[in-house]
Image (cartoon, one colour):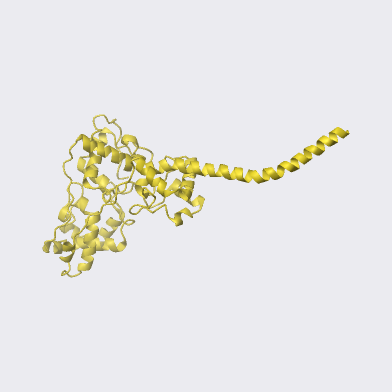
Length: 356
């Protein structure tokens, strides 16, 4: 090897040795910067998806709504990446948590689910709340039907009044919307003030409450109410006449005639986009997660009162939750009015099988 070549090789070696420390110093920072950029993009892109699809159940700032758990808790953020991804992708059995992965019937790709996991672990929930508000997607508040102190005090003198009081509170919150004032029933749910029902063995009624009735609006309550609450409510059925003898006034939820005013329809469309679109699709045309509502057969064969109670009471055996504790009467009517407004232009397709 000639002297010039040796010199060149020596210089090249010196340059390599000089570059390696510089590279070693800057490359980790480079990688960290790129990783931070990736995480930031994942959070930002997931925020809008969260607002459009998840805030309605988990809250504008991840605080959780009703039975739906909070996501802004340390226990959730500390879950393993794998467990979080599985939960988002596959949902949770016996809960209202749907499977969101495309291969599971949902609408999210694997990369979107990966971004969601980063979002849950690293997001600034205050920013999320601001963004949800900017998009007009603040979810409706939980609304509970209250039983007055006067109503409860009227039960004090009755034998077993404590159990009856507990049953009445469960009934007022969860049952009166379908079974009507004073348990007299409605066009969509039978009377519970019934001689035949009181002649039914208690274990059969408990099983019916636990399991629901497929093909009806009677949902399964075993994952919503405690065994004690179910027991108290069933006891209430057997002692309904004792309650009536006190002159108690039961909470009443009346399904009124629904006017098709432009304002009501517009409010219903806005609420549909917040609470229903992620599952039932744009304008109710359906997705793989929930059936189409915008079709002639469903709208022609389902009266307004039934649609109202489907929304309020949920549907047993499906992912359709009961919205009656979160939407007031005007909200429920607005959704019915919006769906009904589509009847003239709705496509003629096979209606959804709501009970399966």
